[in-house]
Length: 219
Image (cartoon, helix red, strand yellow):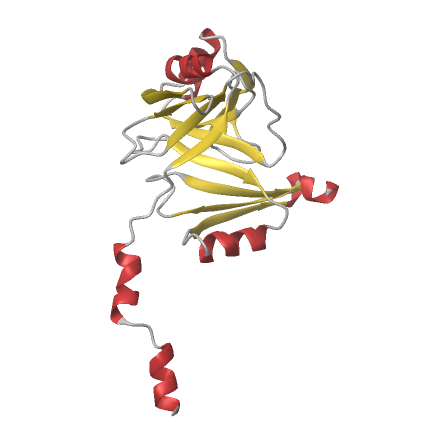
């Protein structure tokens, strides 16, 4: 009886092979904007993205557009949605920012500025580190971190979300979505902890950044 019970819980060869063949990746992020053409212009001319497709659905009273740094079948993209007649949204505190990897942060910031973009943090090293970053804001108030890195197959490299319980969030993304923890960063002096999660290494694909910060104390 013990042998049959052990056999019942023993993973099959097919199950063990699944992780090796699993090709999951983050596909896109959907969010709402108040002026679709204005945002498309900023993303393409200021940030260097490409407009991949655009469509208008008058019966449902919305339009959307997909943008990224490469085709949808191989790159993470953003899906912008414009609902007829709605010109602004409350972004809230749960969403943090997107991140774009670039070989020259200073040059990209100057391009954003030349296109009328808002630079909220000038380029420079992070506190206590060597990575060079900057922050810019799009016309609707969504934040983009610009990170100086070498060549990468996926420039749209991060989506940062704030969570109230980091361990609980990690367990959900691991067990429900199959992500893995790539690394964690604990900075008690700045009152935050980060967990980088994804389906592949940070320099190869888009990753999710869970941020447990001082906002937890306000809940």
